[in-house]
Length: 526
Image (cartoon, rainbow, N blue to C red; front, side, top):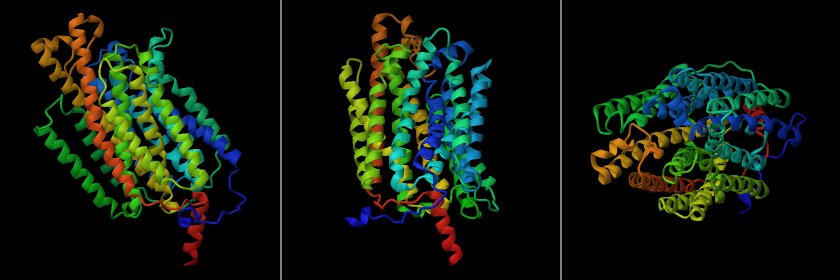
C-alpha cells in the first residue's frame, strides 16, 4: 500500500521552479485558449440550420461544417505534439491561437459555404495545436503529484467548452442583433486575450537541439486519418456502407496508416514514437481516450438535436437543457482532481468514471418523446459525472508513465485518439441516425416520408408539418437517438475494461522540465 503513495522523485528546490501564483497566472491564458478552441467544435451545433439557410447550403455542407473542423484538429494534433518536444512551447501555443483567430475571422465574415469550409479547416488546425499543447505546457510546469489539482479544473474547462457550445450558439442565433456569424467571431477577442496572457505569464526554458521533423510520416498520418474520417461521414447517405467506395476508402486509408507506421518505425524523430506504446499504461489510456471521444462528442451533438426535433425546444432552451451534463462534468472533474492531489491515488477515479459513464449511456438509451425531464436531466448528469472523472485523468496517468522528453508525444497521442473518436463518432452515428429515422418514418408514412424532410438529405421543418405527421417525426427522432446511446453503451463498456487493466503507479513529485534536466544529467553521467 505504501508503495502506491510513496513519491518517485524527491522534490527539487530549484530557483527556476514556477510558484503557485505564477502557475495560476499562466493557466489563466491556457484555459481561455482551450475554452475557445473546444467551443469552436460545438458552438455551431444549434446554428447550423440558420447558417445553411442563409448561405444556400446542402445537407452535405451541413455535415462538413462540423466534420471539417474536427478532421483538421484531429489530423494535426500529433504534429503539434511532436513540435512541442523540439521547439518553444510558448511560441507554438501562440502560433496555434493566431491560426485560430484567422480562421474565426474568415468564418465570421464568409460570403459563401466554400469559404466557410476552408476557414473551418484553418480553425481546426489552430484548435488542434491548442488542445494538444495546453496539457503539454501544464505537464512541463507542474509535477504529476500536484497536477490533479489543476488538471481537474482544466478538464472541467474542456468539458464545459464541449457541452456549453450548443447553449452559447443557440443564444447567439436567437439574439437578433448578433446572429450566427458571432458563433465564429465570439472566439476572436478571447483568443487574443489568451495570446497576451501567455506572453506575460508563461515562462518555460527552451531546450535547443538539432531537430528533424518527420514530414513524410506527418503527411501519411494526416492522409490516412482524413480518408477514414471522410469515409465515415459520407457512408450511409452518399453511398452504401457495403459498396465499392467503402472498400476503396477503407483499404486506402488503412494502407496509408500502415505506411505511416513503417515510416515512424524507421525515422530518428517520429511524429508518434511507436516505442511509447510499449508502456501498458499509454496503450490502454490511448484506447480508452478514443472510446471516451465517441461518448462525449456523439452524446452531446445528438442530444442537442433530440431537444430541438423531438421535444420541440428552441436553440436557446435546447442549450440550457445541457446544463445537467455540464454541471456533472464540472463537479466530478474538479473534485476528483483535488482528491488525487491530496491522496496521490488515481486509478479508482478512472474505474468509477468509466462505470458511471456506462450507466449514463444505458439510461439515456431509454429516452423517448415523453421521458420526464427530471429523469432525463438525471441521466445526463450521470454521463457528465462519468466523463469528468475519466477524461482528464487518462492524460495524467499517461504523462506520469513516460520519460520527460516524450511528454509532448504521449499527450498529443491521447488527444489525437480522443479527437478521432469524436470525429468518427459524430460521422458514423450521424449516418446511423439518418438511416434509422428514414426507416422508422417510411414504416409509418410510406412514400410520403420523403415529403416531410425526414430522410437523409433534409432536416425536417417542424413548423410546416401537420400535427399527426409531426408526432411521427418527433417519435422517430427520439427512438433513433435512444438507439444511438444503446450502440454507444458497449463502446463505453470497452473503455471500462481498458482502465481496469491499467496499473496504478505513484505520481512524480517534480515537473516535466525538472524531470527532463534530471534525465539529461543521468544520460551525460552514463
